[in-house]
Image (cartoon, rainbow, N blue to C red; front, side):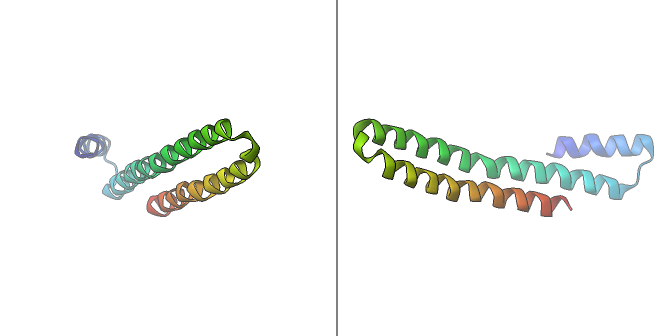
Amino acid sequence: MEAVSRLIQQATEATGTDPADLKKANAAIGAGFAYGIAAIGPGIGIGYLVGKSVEAMARQPESAGMVRTTMFLGIAFTEALALIGFVVFILIGL
Protein backbone atom coordinates (compact mmCIF):
# COMPACT_ATOMS: atom_id res chain seq x y z
CA MET A 1 0.00 0.00 0.00
CA GLU A 2 2.84 2.35 0.82
CA ALA A 3 4.48 1.58 -2.51
CA VAL A 4 1.32 2.52 -4.38
CA SER A 5 1.09 5.72 -2.36
CA ARG A 6 4.68 6.60 -3.23
CA LEU A 7 4.06 5.97 -6.93
CA ILE A 8 1.00 8.21 -6.89
CA GLN A 9 2.90 10.88 -4.98
CA GLN A 10 5.74 10.82 -7.50
CA ALA A 11 3.27 11.05 -10.36
CA THR A 12 1.52 14.04 -8.80
CA GLU A 13 4.83 15.80 -8.19
CA ALA A 14 5.95 15.18 -11.75
CA THR A 15 2.70 16.46 -13.26
CA GLY A 16 2.01 19.20 -10.70
CA THR A 17 -1.31 17.69 -9.62
CA ASP A 18 -3.16 18.84 -6.52
CA PRO A 19 -2.43 16.82 -3.31
CA ALA A 20 -6.20 16.49 -2.79
CA ASP A 21 -6.25 14.27 -5.86
CA LEU A 22 -3.63 12.10 -4.20
CA LYS A 23 -5.91 11.69 -1.20
CA LYS A 24 -8.83 10.72 -3.45
CA ALA A 25 -6.66 8.20 -5.29
CA ASN A 26 -5.53 6.62 -2.02
CA ALA A 27 -9.14 6.47 -0.83
CA ALA A 28 -10.19 4.72 -4.04
CA ILE A 29 -7.37 2.18 -3.75
CA GLY A 30 -8.21 1.51 -0.10
CA ALA A 31 -11.89 1.11 -0.93
CA GLY A 32 -11.02 -1.38 -3.67
CA PHE A 33 -8.95 -3.46 -1.28
CA ALA A 34 -11.72 -3.29 1.32
CA TYR A 35 -14.30 -4.62 -1.10
CA GLY A 36 -11.94 -7.32 -2.33
CA ILE A 37 -11.42 -8.54 1.21
CA ALA A 38 -15.15 -8.25 1.96
CA ALA A 39 -15.97 -10.44 -1.05
CA ILE A 40 -13.66 -13.28 -0.02
CA GLY A 41 -15.77 -14.40 2.95
CA PRO A 42 -19.11 -14.66 1.16
CA GLY A 43 -17.43 -16.39 -1.78
CA ILE A 44 -16.01 -19.08 0.47
CA GLY A 45 -19.30 -19.32 2.39
CA ILE A 46 -21.44 -19.79 -0.71
CA GLY A 47 -19.06 -22.39 -2.12
CA TYR A 48 -19.12 -24.35 1.12
CA LEU A 49 -22.91 -24.07 1.40
CA VAL A 50 -23.61 -25.26 -2.13
CA GLY A 51 -21.11 -28.10 -1.83
CA LYS A 52 -22.67 -29.39 1.37
CA SER A 53 -26.17 -29.01 -0.10
CA VAL A 54 -25.27 -31.07 -3.16
CA GLU A 55 -23.74 -33.67 -0.86
CA ALA A 56 -26.93 -33.76 1.24
CA MET A 57 -29.12 -34.11 -1.87
CA ALA A 58 -26.94 -36.94 -3.15
CA ARG A 59 -27.21 -38.81 0.15
CA GLN A 60 -30.96 -38.30 0.60
CA PRO A 61 -32.68 -37.51 -2.71
CA GLU A 62 -36.12 -37.56 -1.09
CA SER A 63 -35.29 -34.44 0.94
CA ALA A 64 -33.81 -32.52 -2.01
CA GLY A 65 -36.67 -30.00 -2.08
CA MET A 66 -36.20 -28.91 1.52
CA VAL A 67 -32.41 -28.88 1.20
CA ARG A 68 -32.63 -26.76 -1.97
CA THR A 69 -34.96 -24.25 -0.28
CA THR A 70 -32.67 -23.98 2.73
CA MET A 71 -29.67 -23.66 0.42
CA PHE A 72 -31.21 -20.71 -1.43
CA LEU A 73 -32.03 -18.99 1.86
CA GLY A 74 -28.45 -19.48 3.01
CA ILE A 75 -27.12 -18.13 -0.28
CA ALA A 76 -29.32 -15.04 0.06
CA PHE A 77 -28.12 -14.32 3.59
CA THR A 78 -24.50 -14.92 2.67
CA GLU A 79 -24.78 -12.73 -0.42
CA ALA A 80 -26.19 -9.96 1.76
CA LEU A 81 -22.76 -9.78 3.41
CA ALA A 82 -21.15 -9.14 0.03
CA LEU A 83 -23.70 -6.42 -0.72
CA ILE A 84 -22.99 -4.75 2.62
CA GLY A 85 -19.30 -4.82 1.72
CA PHE A 86 -20.13 -3.20 -1.63
CA VAL A 87 -22.09 -0.42 0.08
CA VAL A 88 -19.16 0.23 2.43
CA PHE A 89 -16.88 0.28 -0.64
CA ILE A 90 -19.05 2.98 -2.22
CA LEU A 91 -19.20 5.01 0.99
CA ILE A 92 -15.44 4.89 1.50
CA GLY A 93 -14.83 5.85 -2.11
CA LEU A 94 -16.91 9.02 -1.81
